[in-house]
Image (spheres, helix red, strand yellow):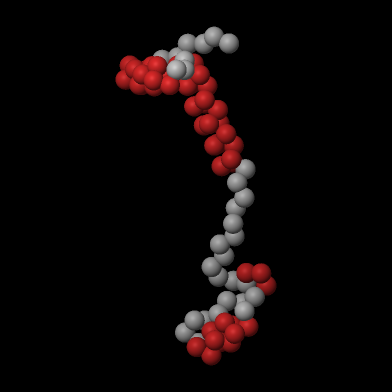
Length: 79
């Protein structure tokens, strides 16, 4: 499909130089860049979030008061 874009002169010159150096067309460079950008955005949108709970009861266990050495050592020995 044919389309028109407005690119800065500097960007277009860089693209042309890179295309020439790699034996490709500017069109193929633009296509590759768009594919990578869209794939990256899709990966970010579908990324799995990790639970970084810092208080409360993660996984059903109470957090330890690290100033209570006895409780801390007991938990360390348990795990």
